[in-house]
Amino acid sequence: MTANIDFDAINRVALAALPALLARWLPDGRLEGREWTVRNPRRVDRRPGSFRINLTTGRWADFASGDKGGDIISLAAYLADIGQADAARRLADMLGIDHG
Image 1 (cartoon, rainbow, N blue to C red):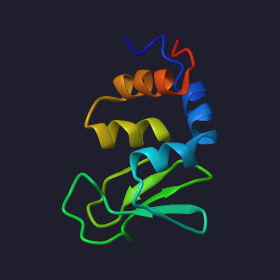
Image 2 (cartoon, helix red, strand yellow):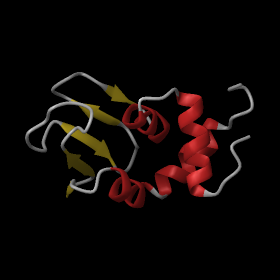
Image 3 (tube, one colour):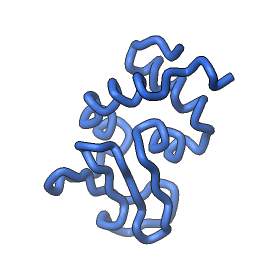
């Protein structure tokens, strides 16, 4: 059930912890300005450049494939290939916050 999940609260906490989350999820990336640039682990990607996560907003995109999202929950869902609700719950658990 997604009605009880506070997506906004989870995203706020996740955004504050984003550098640590990216170091865990995408450790081979590099900081370029306000963006984390990394190879996309969901496709054959030879070098970093097209997959970027904005550290200020949490928006992310793979400019080569067209995949994109507007927040950290959608990034977690994309990376784990799961739904938004499951990603929100997992992320809340990882961050030690209530997901309801």
